[in-house]
Length: 472
Image 1 (cartoon, rainbow, N blue to C red):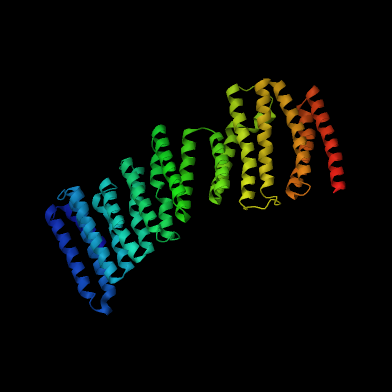
Image 2: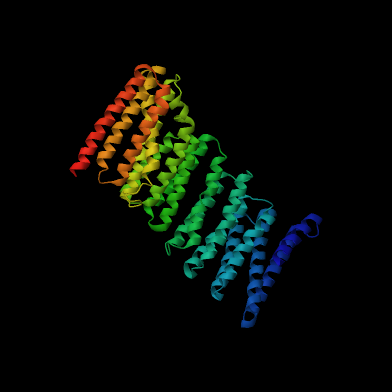
């Protein structure tokens, strides 16, 4: 309340012209010095130390805010000098907190400065971000010595929040926002070298890229892609270099940045599906389950985009003419959807995320694989034979191919329950497609070919499968 009273007094003095700029700054400095001195004097008696902490915290925050005003409002101090004085005040308060072994005092000093500084600077400016970053830097040695974990959160939130609000209001240049994110992330990484499980620093590392990514959303496409892509590259590189929890958190943030870059640069889900396949292979060979989780997220979002724009259900059920460019895009998306549906369960089983006998990964993956394979065959058929003829040929091939794949799965699934059930489900899907779709949509030789081909293959498969089961 006292600190807020000081701020309101300065604002009132400015509005009514009571004191000139220099007397205002002098009065603020004197008041802050008196509070700090009274707190130090009270700290000599154990019974009065709680009051001493409150007085010193208020006094140091007053001195810091007075420095902000002298630099940003009245230009009594050049920016480098103001930064130096502000840093000296913050360091002095933190050293006093270390001497008194009071994390509460350290958090109060940092929090008081961070909350009230925007009132003095009249907005979210570059000077404000710089002042707040200087406080954050000053807390790093203290945390390394005392391990006051909440202090890292208290020191990082003001500059990151200011950067977010400033870029949203267009009052900050992008380079200031980048510096705020880089400093916060670097401070978190330094602190995590001592304890990589410390939750506050992990949280700061996770949210540090947020101002840069928000800034990228507000820029034009080339600059936005460059900024988000650069952030993704830096974070993923950190993931490969830094081990343990910090590297994992940086990697997850890097995947978010990579997804934003992809969605900004490309339309549809083709590229996202390709990235999902690459991540799945990377997860398998690096034994990283978080990369596998990122691959799953990329695959789901990319698949939804593909369903909405590249390989729509209308492409599979309506016999229309489509331009070659659309068919080529549909082929690429379908092939990548098929690949993702195969590679993701394979990597999950190899990493022991799921058991090979479990149906959980195979059923959704099988549906996606069926859809991707159908889209690939149909798009290729209509590309070779345009129009309705290609549509009919494509569906005939799809139906017959489903029965062939079902036969293979049944043979491979004699000892693997999941494959056996998947093969039986695929048989049911092929029969359902024949009766519910092919009978109505196809005509002439296409209908005959679909029924004869699927029927003969099912007969052969049934006889072969029965013999193999009986022999075992």
